[in-house]
Image 1 (cartoon, helix red, strand yellow):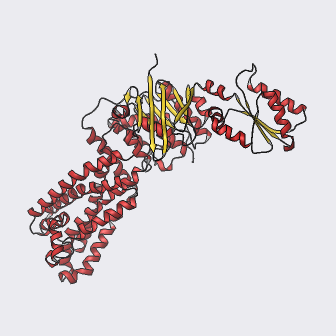
Image 2 (image 1 turned 90 degrees about the vertical axis):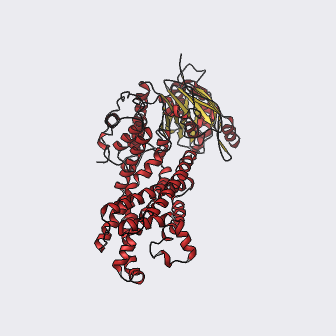
Image 3 (image 1 turned 180 degrees about the vertical axis):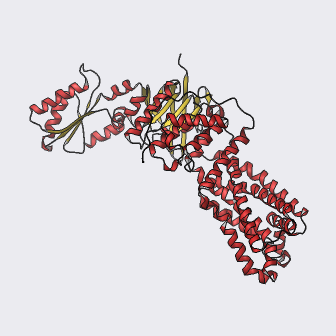
Length: 274
Length: 326
């Protein structure tokens, strides 16, 4: 059947023009838009490759390529690598929000959002919230992969969950920087390019793959200020034991700082973009 | 007393060197369809986007029901709905999901948003397609869904930017029915179009825009009589008879032929005023004179003046250009 049977157009009854203004508009609108972004992700699951297959390939490659050389045995190296690569994957996944918003902005549906009497920031908050699903998927696929390869949660499940919450929270804050990029750059490819340039030093300039004390001095100084490096050490501490509190303070401070700077800038850039 | 839905004064929007809207003064009364007629690039869409608060004007003022589109943008947004030239729908979501989302954003509670979505899908004949993703919709279905999305909260003023461009005739008629239904429950509609007959069918007043300025405004009747009642197109069997045919037709219709590149075609605009006969009557008389003179014609039509012809009549520059060329 190619055509729909068309009933004659009836005059649609006049709707009650917006039920009286309800409180928490921004929250409700953002959640409705987050649901939209969730529906889109579910309809195009191939968008999730970078948080499902790709990290698994990384883990398998790194563990078996480098494990012997760096840690002397692959199991030891898996214990060392997995908490850090979890952080790396989740943080990296935050780039996608900026890329997909950049694509989305060019579509007519954003004109619709703009012409509605809703908060200017709601479409952006909605996208960022909707993409939290990506972080959850990344966590699940890495956890399963790790457990299959023999990863042991030395400290039990609750500290591990705390590590996940901290990581996702940080990625949420950082994603606003990429939302800003998505608002100011013209092409999705450019957003991805610029984002990756910042992401490589952030995620690989860390103690993810090798112990920090084996790094040259200048790199160690970078690791000491890099919030992603602190998130990795905190995740390690929570999952397999080690210092936690100091690292978490760094992560929280950086996260809130990034959020406070980039979220307002992103909303402002969105407003200006026509 | 009629309320004023839109009032603009010297509205300007500049893109680089292009003055897309160049001092537009427009007054649109509430409660009817106002047609904005103009060719591609006349500034119709830009003007509409400024009125719907999607673009910020570079000069002049615009008010919608007395609210300034810049200073009181939020108030304006709650009064207007816009259906653009390109569907503002989410392609990956179903028709129903699109409507429910917009309902939620307009402040409906979930059950109310669903009920209203179903009501509109039903009214616009989209119930059977409600659960399909919009990317699988035809052009006409998209346009209807798009308009229904704009009608979720029954705006007081609805902008329809070229709502039938690219639609087949049947879908176009459906959109026309929707526009009439919308007006019947009290919404003011500002409709932009490139087609005079569309404006004629729907609008009670028409404004003609060219180069970002209003160049004429009036009822469809006024506008057409300024242009002529219609245009006679005649296709001759023998191009050699063209000069004779032109002479005869000009005399019978009291107008000069419009030059046409096709050597077998004669095109004459029938003046709308000054004759006590209808245009069709005049044309019929002219045709019989051709027959008497032994000029064979293969095809004949009496059409409404086209947008081109409206422009020839309203602006002098293209008309003089063509006549000197001939």
